[in-house]
Length: 114
Length: 116
Image 1 (tube, each protein chain N blue to C red):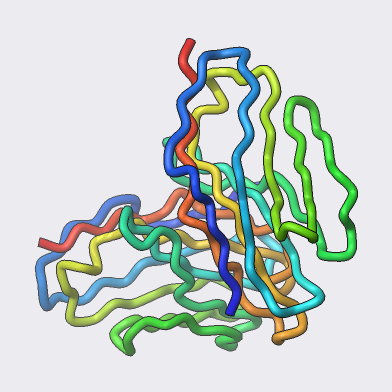
Image 2: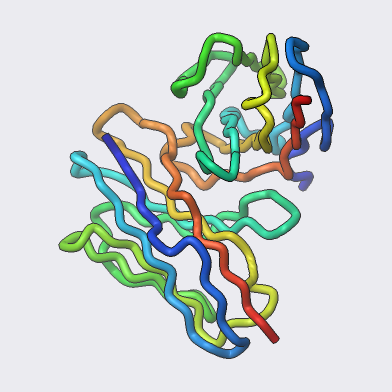
């Protein structure tokens, strides 16, 4: 059974640009959550999607957005990139609501903003 | 609001030593879930255990054991006879059920280095 796949693995952008990250969950999983990981702030929740609907949202500015498709694949978008957006972005999937379930994580997308 | 504190930022032990990773949590909910995840250098977090607030039984899985104590709001993780492969960052996490299935809140993590 394939695990959670995140693409791309590494990304370098400049300030002001926008970026789209992709996440393919484990087959049969309906929930996809996104986390931002930085050395200073640790793991911070961005949002969770379940059956194409945003179920929860973390405390991030509106520049961070996401969506989920009918096949449960998810994308997150960051517009007008700032230096502080440099981070490892992790995606996790679960069968049901992420708050109760064991989460399966991808290897992440390492975003560097120059 | 929920909060998870892992006071130990980094721990270094010699192989075969036992090591305990501390986790203290804060929540006002009576129903909640506690988790431990391991993050090896490859980056992906790997699930280790989930415990709900009504189950205070300690858990043992091979060299791993967990001690859940509601009286002290702690959920500590012990690795017995540590091995080099245990080197990773370990995260404790909490989610609340009463407050409407809140997302997982993670502690800052403890970096464990096991030296051969």
